[in-house]
Length: 488
Image 1 (cartoon, one colour):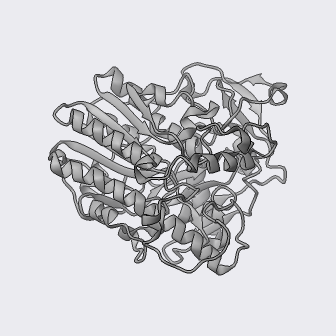
Image 2 (cartoon, one colour; image 1 turned 90 degrees about the vertical axis):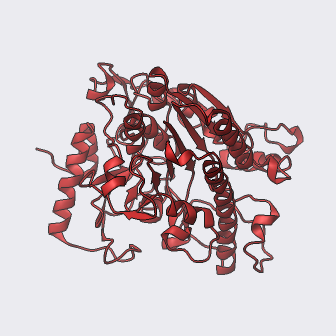
């Protein structure tokens, strides 16, 4: 038996043919839907990039205890467990955050791994007179300068990081197709911003535009004129079509080598992306609307052989580690809270009553597939809030000395295997998570989440589901206080 997961970043499912889009060219995603179970109610867990990927190792939520950071010493890592049980785990990626301070323990859990350079502001090529090496206070400005440098080295399709990543993935598949007991995680940063493609993809979406270069949306409210907004959508669509093409190369090799009989295939993303919906660009700065939270999710399981069917079971990416361990008949750690997907794929069996999701210090959200409840902080300062960790790094840097002045040692959580973690006061919240009021939506009646509802009975039910899931995931007591929840 073999397994492949194709992982994209920032897929907005509303711009995909299998989920009803009629203007973005995604024939291979449509082809995938014909060969797999397509899930309607797949939701994120922790946002953004690395918190989501911690869940792909551990099968449990990250965001209640910690912000962006590496795997912890006590974490159970699915690819490492595979390796320890005789299943070769291989990672191919162009996702540069794995090579930063806040992601440095992830790729090393795999048996082997490969990295393609050049995405976003990856500190890759050094051009001194571009000014990138200066210690500019504005990290975003430096990242954009580095991206300008990187693009000068990516002038042909074959040089693009996504193209190189899929080529490496196909090389691994071809080299090992006749061998059992391996897992490939083929992961590209695309279609994450910036929406950079070669001309052939852009030509799929001809339109008139004579404004400035605009393929990297800010995480903020839309202020641009309509023609500029539409141009950005076309830039994203071009990159989506490029992703679709390379997904097709995986489907092609599975056809060619007859891998469908013994190979599990999962295709997913870490989160969606706003392209003007609710008048927002990007992620993190707005409430967790379904453009971000309700993700595309496809599974082909050769044991169930379900193809071309839709599934309504409520699933999350925390289910991926449990699914892979169950597929290879490996015992799952007791700390892993995700569920194997086989029954949901085979018979649409329900896996959970509700799903929890959010980001550290932001709304804590819960959905039962019909209602979405976004619980905001009850306190103006969004406190108390702590990071519980033994790995004191943020996204691109270590914790600052000032942050470490009031460290306490916390009592062990049930999932820390007896380890006491550091309890470090967190800032009010990252600047990219403003605060909004608590919101409740009926997504059956209002799929676009355009009209929040006021219904005390429904809110009480959703609060019960929220609290039950927080308890099940050993949320620290101050999270209830921050959210204004009384817990008996």
